[in-house]
Amino acid sequence: MKATHSPRTPRPQDANLCAAGFLRPLALGALLLSLSACSLFDSVGGLFGDDDVEPPAELVEFEQELRLNRRWSVNVGDGQGDFYNTLSPAIDREFIFAAAADGTVLCIERATGDVVWRERLDDVEISGGVGASSGLVLVGTREAEVIALDQISGRELWRTTVSSEVVSAPQTNGSIVVLQTVDGKLVGLDAVTGAQSWIYETTIPALTLRGSSKPVIAGNNVIAGFANGMVASVNAANGFLQWEERVAIPQGRYDIERVIDVDGDLLLVGNTVYASSYQGNLMGFDVQTGRIVWGIEASSYHGLAQGFGNLYYTNDDSHVIALRNNTDDVVWENNSLRLRSVTAPRTLGNYIAVADFEGWLHLLSQVDGHFVSRVNVDGDGVRAPLVTDNDTIYVFGNSGRLAAYSIR
Image (cartoon, rainbow, N blue to C red; front, side, top):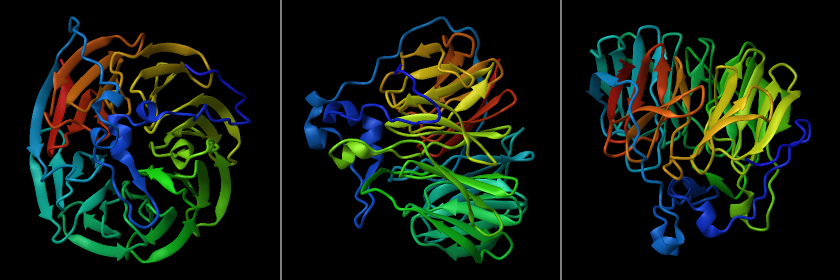
């Protein structure tokens, strides 16, 4: 764990990273040039050779304390597709909504796994989703479109063209739909018509991670994190800037050393919004004023979770770490999944759930971080953030299989 620093003066960690130390399988697959070509790197070996890459940790055996029971499983198109998508399901009321890269969108009953409706959007490659609230199902596309479907019928309500690809889930409160594009714009659309209401623009660096955090709607505020290491809050009605704060400061001589994306989903707890940055910091901000209320030096491209008085995160080496709320105290750290490209942590009862690149779903104790259960859910791996609700974990595998697991 890195040394901490004053929460009012965020300072990034040492970014003097060698190629082998930085270019992990997941990080390399996620990097893109954000100027004209947006070229995606495909493999580590093709650039540096296998000898330059530390292999992922082998799974350690343990005595399982409980079972993860698969309640139901549904196929959702081609899953994450051929690009580095992280499409994740969304829950609203008694339904869960999921989308695949090939344009397939489903509404499923959470309790039974019964498919309520299935729609296939023609000539569409979905890259951002799913957002679900206020009667809408929202997805973004590689072709720079935002599409709204009716939650009850699956009927397309509207589609709007934006400035560039959308790789995170659009969000809505019923009045406004907000989304982030890969060219650094935060956009507000009318929820009924899809017409653009406002746009907030930032400048993005030459090199960024492929991804963006989904915006958070908190009352009259829309809060988003950007590839330049900033978090900004704008007025939901007109897009006027409320406040802007830096999570990380770029350091280093080369562009690859200066990557500081805020890609993990923001965590809203009461009046505090938490953000994480790659090669930067974890920070907490007051929702209304943007005042920094907490900060620690750490690197993560995933969002955080909270439970048992702790904040949980997975760092860029796939260590799962628990911090005492709003302090620099490390409660525990589990490094047994090192370099396994684990997802963001999700809390479920007394446990934390993460999944990895080989498709294993891991359950850890919130108390001390030891493993309590494990099951393989998708041989093609899992990239998408998990979704949890009460005693159920919903896992959307890369192959397109959405499954619900409960603790038994």
